[in-house]
Length: 509
Ligand code: HEM
Image (cartoon, protein in one colour):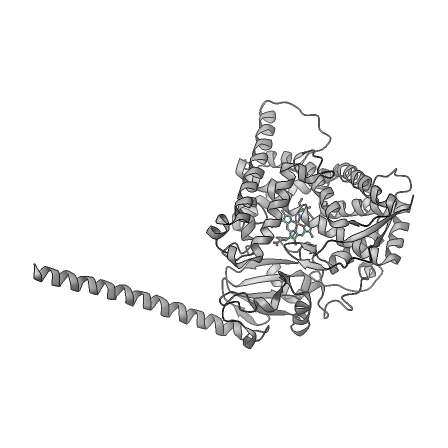
């Protein structure tokens, strides 16, 4: 018995020693790997290693007041005009690409989005699933092929009626402020209008969201989840799924996600039943859902219910906050630069002179100055300021071979404000985009819609919407900025205004 106890004691201690040795080996390997990674990334251009906090890395230099410090970012772009490295925490280096030469190497690939812990797209995953924005590899390639017909010009043409009728409602609301001369917050009004538009284009969903968005549970849920993605991205506390899911905002997010999925499932189901029953609906246009339901790949296989839902949700997300940001900041620049606003108004008056308050499909191609002003607005205030990728193989950029799994960001804001690419980058000068100007631009110098195989599939939809809404506003009003209100940019998933954009509308006719 004593012999057995002795034996089992020695087996146990050998086992414990074995585990300890194993843990030591794992620890040493991780440590060596980390030291190698640290040495490689520390040696790259960017914030100095001396400024790096042992836990937060360079986060407190880069992020101030819950948002990227734009002056700090500008200083980095000026010092390192091709790319720079930032340590997000002690173990997460990020390479920020800010020049066409470096950006095009990444954007010509279809490298996936970083969806791991701490990745900026991860919080959107429970809502959007593997829709086109977040999918990678073969799944993304198939979806991209199946969804491309949804943005054919024959499909987009009838949406002009939706853009115009939704803008009618918007103008009705601005009229109330114009009558009293009271200043109003532009971002929210535009957001309600673009939500109205995308709800109708995505699945013919009619709501009263422009009048009272918060009264409509679906619209309220969409606003909540979009805001809560930002909340999660800004706090280190919510990095892990379980801390997020247990937190109050996490629980609201999950509840609203379930509700949004439920609504989409019901709409898809009832549309499928109509199709199965062979009922011919009298429709003036095909919405995205119609296209998704009829899409088939080479083998004749269509999209599953979950896939269709993910794409509808992706359109809701990508097709609403982005256009809100674009339209609001373009109008802000026109209100600030009255001479360009006047030039646009003259052009709009001429183009729309016989059109009876309606921007037609043909009109869209007649806006030359307006298009220049829209592009310059999106250069200064890119609606999607940063997009990210995770490399799946080694990549050589500027003679440096970056290891597999490097986190890259295409910093569109940095690119559009890179003084080696854009002279007087802070000056609003729409003539940069004039056809008469012999400025030869690199095709990767101006990329509000990204570029390459993973560029924005909705860019024509977005440009048509922006032109229609802005032309109709300028036809009826002259906008001025409220001098008592300071407007500040805030980089989130889209470019926001910290305290909104307050302006005054004066009726022209
Ligand atoms: C001013 C408006 C818009 C801007 C500035 C914009 C910008 C962008 C950018 C920069 C990307 C690349 C994202 C990334 O790489 O992570 C993107 C992708 C995408 N956008 Fe847009 N977008 C706009 C409007 C729209 C609209 C209206 C829709 C749909 C109705 C849409 C649907 C998408 C989709 C589905 C993707 C993913 C494409 C893919 O990965 O294949 N976007 N957009």
